[in-house]
Amino acid sequence: MRPGEKFPARPGAPAAASQARQAGAALLTAMLTVALVASLAAGALWQQWRSVEVEAAERARVQSLWLLTGALDWARLILREDARENARSGGADYLSEPWAVPLEEARLSTFLAADKKSDPDADASASQSFLSGLITDLQSRLNVTNLVDSGGKVSEPSVNTFAKLFQLLGLPPGELQMLVENLRLALDPSPENAANPQAPLMPQRIDQLVWLGLSPPSLAALRPFITLLPVRTPVNLNTASATVLSASIPSLEMGQAQRLVTLRQANHFKTLAEVTAQLGQTAVPLNAAQHSVNSRFFEVQGRLRLDQAVVEEHSVVQRDGLEVKTLWRDRGAAAP
Image (cartoon, rainbow, N blue to C red; front, side):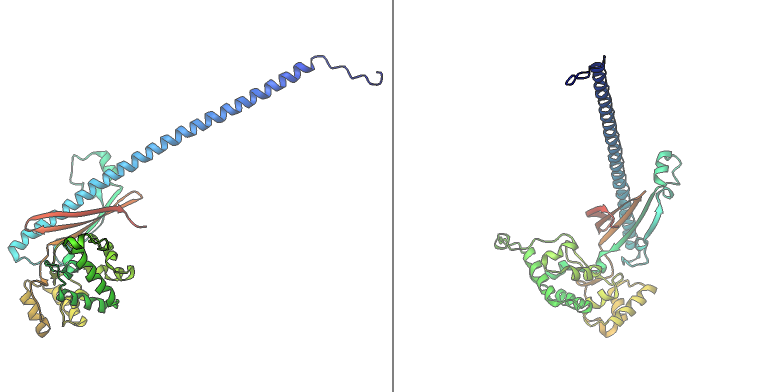
């Protein structure tokens, strides 16, 4: 070969290169097609899984709604039957009555065991469901509403009761003064107060008392001993704790309050006169406006466990005679 001459191309080389490029493009297209099909399949599978999960969550929500509604109706029935019994026995409410016995966590299927016609699928679901509950006498606590009377004026006896409770718990008295003043403003129906943008809203739940000046630590300390009801209520001396007894009876010391709790465990008080007889000189003053031996307001707590999900419901009911009506209900997932 002379200098400067190129090697001659091999016969068929352009065709081979073209075929190689076509094969590579076909392979790449196939890989992209496979990836696209896999992505679409994964997306469809995820959508199906999500639909199943949403349906299961909705089914669990509806089931919990009906079961907790049934538990509330059961509690109302117990309170109604207790009222019927009270009408025969004198009307006192105390902690040895059936309504005061907590329902420990029990498998829901145990409540359905007597139903011979129950659905097998429902039985299988019920075997994984657990129900518990508790009825609490809200008049065993001091009612924040008592701090302001029906005329919109501050109630001195109730303020003194709360002042003693704050003292027993070691809470700052300044917060009580702020609570009383803000509560008075929240309950003031005058047009001037309604037009005042600084007037506080009236709380509907215990947690909302921070609106009226209570700090979160003080509210946490007060929570077992106070309630917030729509009307003024006396303290039930049969169900109140020693701390509430001591706070609600001005001259009652904690030791005497503990003795009163011990005495009523053996024999509950049927009248205020029986309490006065037990307390002697420390019973001044006892009156029906601040003290009682029966109750109208109760809290019903229901707890439902469905597999891994736990739902709790808190309801407040008012009992007047044989009528037991629900004032409000709160439902949500249980805290971990």
